[in-house]
Image (cartoon, rainbow, N blue to C red; front, side, top):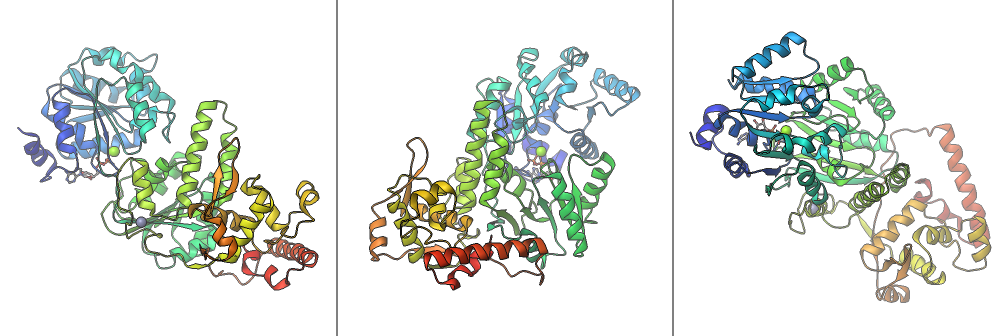
Amino acid sequence: MTPLQALQKYFGYSEFRHEQEDIVKQVLAGHDVMALMPTGGGKSLCYQLPALLMDGLTIVISPLIALMKDQVDSLNVNGIPAAFLNSAQNPDEQRDIINRLNRREIKLLYLAPERLFGSESKLINFLKSLPVSQIAIDEAHCISHWGHDFRPEYLMLSGLKNEFPKVPVIALTATADKLTQKDIVDKLALHNPAIFVASFNRANITYRVILKNKSFYQLLDFLKNRTEDAGIIYCLSRKSTETLAANLKDEGFSAEAYHAGLDNATKARNQEAFLRDEVKIIVATIAFGMGINKSNVRYVVHMDMPKNIEGYYQETGRAGRDGLPSDAVLYYSPGDVMKLKGFVTLEDNEEQSRVMLRKLDDMATYSELHTCRRKFLLNYFDEEAPDNCGSCDICLSEYKKFDGTLIAQKALSAVARLNQRFGSGYVVDFLRGSKSDKIWNDHKQLKTYGIGADISKAQWQRYLREMQAYGYLKTSDDGFPVLKLTPKSDAVLKGTEKVELTESQIIEEKTTEIPPFESELLLMLKKVRFDLAERENVPPYVILSDATLQE
Ligand code: ADP
Ligand code: MG
Ligand code: ZN
């Protein structure tokens, strides 16, 4: 039987997808393989088909017990003899499977890594006595610290090639950048592997990043025409998944929370309800999603910035598996970057921390792009892409531009006034006329001090980054980042060149009342601005502009 005939006979599909056929051939020829394919791309078939075409047993390593059961069930439905062994089974069930393995009745055996290598496990010696023809490692990125879902038990798999030196190993993942790929090959000791990277482009997903500004109301705005659609909303903390799910319910949405801290029954119930379309929205931490095979997810929203591009791309990839138009929305705030960086420095492994910080910076760069987001994502995974995808917020020109020449002039003159010796945080404090002792004492006499008090800190940071993207400013990398003028700065300062900046997306609030605490805060802020205005002779109307209220 050829691979194509087997595909048609066992799976009922008429043709291979992506690189499936080449991968299958490599495995059949006895080579080690690493295959990268997007979620839903059809990785399972890459080892299931060879398993059927080869004599002997295929061992499949998979991280989650729940996933194993689904996979085995659907194989059995197709008449393919597959089974799994895990700790949730009783001794009788386990003995039954061992017996069937002994009788060579099983073609695919699913195991968690700790089951295969667990200390008291005699399983590995038993399996070595069987004719094992292939070992498949699903979700192989779990072996790498550099991946976004490191699982210590996966490290046990580094012993695999010693135990089964002659058996071809196929490692599969939907999420691995270059570093993670190399790590997977090293840790599994793959021998001269054939590496396949399918296109990761998800053409039916529209990517958007929206500056966070009362994100709950932004979310309501996004959801208002999508009440019939299924969607996943990711939050950083367990607590916020519960709060958000409850708030959405209050607004009449069908939503449930999902995170690793919920008891198993609740998790299973919420997940099932979502899969069956009984619940439209699942509000989850990243604990939710791996192996979830729901094709009609219309949107994936991130309420907080994810920790890295791999995770983000994996999570957004859960939208639109049916190929229909779908949305990926990220609510971004530069404050999230700082918060996440704060967590990283708690890590004790220095190299690991550095990589994590770099990945956070990549994520922040993505969030603040002024060029095609899809191109950035695909380039990140070493894939070529055209400059304009036509279906991300940037390419759709969803952001209004305005004449930001005056703002740019203020920023550039501040940088010049400070002799190009400070980083963006300091420049912003200077622009806003910070009263912190050091800045105040050093600069209060300067005329430019506080000329940008009408613009919030976050907004200034955005403008400064945008100006850098356009080349009006640059960051020197001597020791610590310092803002410098560029050859293009001059024309702006002289007023011979206009600067277009991007308007931030402030949406109308649904509530008429501002909670008391917040309104007090706003009053306080306004007062500070008035003080500043008086001191600096800035007309008060500037001070009370929308930009002030954004904080
Ligand atoms: P992955 O593990 O890469 O996320 P799966 O292996 O679970 O993806 O496959 C996703 C879906 O695509 C499954 O429903 C599978 O049956 C289907 N599929 C896989 N290969 C093909 C193919 N060649 N033709 C049609 N459907 C396929
Ligand atoms: Mg899979
Ligand atoms: Zn684009």
